[in-house]
Image (cartoon, rainbow, N blue to C red):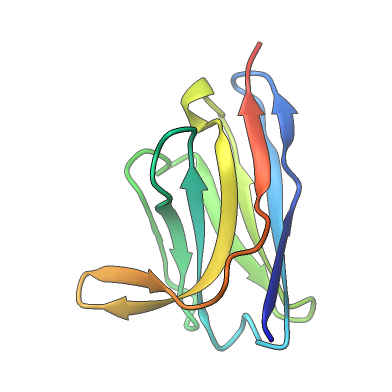
Length: 121
């Protein structure tokens, strides 16, 4: 069974940075399209960044220019570098392998536990 384990969250002041990690077991991040999702309190889970097996990246408008998704194939890990953090970035962050259906990305695996990011002074 594929496991996705997110880590790297924490409490950070506005304007600060964090790097989230997503370690995948069984499946290979190098051959899968991968995505990071954000779920703020009371909101639905939203996709904020994707990286294809070919290395193409895409971002939600809310994080464009501030967040960067990347992967280390040797470590089978996907990262989300988060800079210039804002209070509205406060959420639980999840990763998943994703599949493109038209203009939509759909998650393929069971969700991990996520990692909490809190941006507050």
